[in-house]
Image (cartoon, rainbow over all chains, first blue to last red):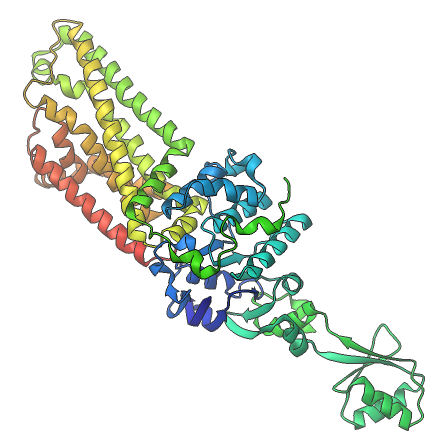
Length: 306
Length: 286
């Protein structure tokens, strides 16, 4: 379990992480979602004791990371950037990490096999592709067979095959009862990987809940209505409290704040013909963008003007 | 690259619950860190290249200078003959070899920052003082051993060349102060390496740390020559590397602290640099 309490981090006058609190329980994949620059990596570095917070705390299995007697046995982490010396071979990179925590050398071969890098074990990591680097990073995270795993943007730069592999691995790690925290700025990726989401923007917690809840809560819903009597129908619906908007590309209306049953009722009791009555849900990506719109650091101006 | 079945991910003890997985683990020790740092040093090519350069510089320059000095002695002036120091001639390559040894110490730290390895290192060993101490111990021992070997090789080759062309004088380890001067060369290099690692930890960038050590060894002592005599003598007397160098000299220089007090002066400087480096490392974000 990972617990983050009122964590705050400042760089000069900018607040990277702002009084952030959340809990990551064992047994499920927790997605850590937010636009670029939201403070995800900074938070993960603070959990790992790499950066120290201005205030607040982060604990792993109830303890400060610094107090873990052999951290790699308890926490494995894949950090966003390559954290390895390019002049060292993959096997030696893992050997260094294993030795530092008293992990048997035999484990190096095991984790290399797990991530499919046995054939390049003796090669210097300088020549590794982004995907191979990510696999080696994951191998390092798995060295101590830890109960807690942190992955910072693990699918960045991976091909579809690699993405599927990482996704399946994270799910199976969680299924074994481990705590898995994975960060991403891609909502759609999280929707298929994570069970639970912690969404942050500008260092602040925006939302937290299961993926299903998240869709439920944040997905703004509307009903697409097409009818030969649109004018009359729209007046009636507005009178009943609906927000009505013309659809630019379709001959219909987008109706919010009213469900399809009510709209059907209104149409029937006024003898109006309906050609279409379609409940619509915003896509996850739209919901996420809407939720974080206020907290995006560098929004394109076209996005702002909408 | 083949894609492994993700179900293999949990490894040998996958069936264990997380609680038992972490239950019986032996706490990582300082010795574990020392082993890891030794592997780090051993497994990059730059270590071997730099040590080879140090060997070529020390033995090669030492032999070349000895050969030239041996031939020159017959035509040397009386004052040149009076200051002829066979030990220091045979060890003259260390004036440059020391830089290679110090730079390797610097790279041992700064390459961690330039490659991003430092994040993996500090995640594995969150006790930063332990990580620094392990690095210092490993590299100080390496530079001590390498320094001793190269010093004795350089000394014997140099004396052999001097002996081979009479009337040039040569010395043996039994002569006054000679064994001390040769045998402390490795010790001097070990302390210099400690300073290099300290500077590397403080500065983090390879270029910055190398500039600092070059300034410490060559530039600032050179600049000090422009100072008024009394001030110059005081600065040179206590300047860490100038003072420390006294221990590897057979003939004591004038206006110096002497061999052991001078070496102690350098050691105190090394301790101060390491203490500041440790405090900064502890506080700084990785």
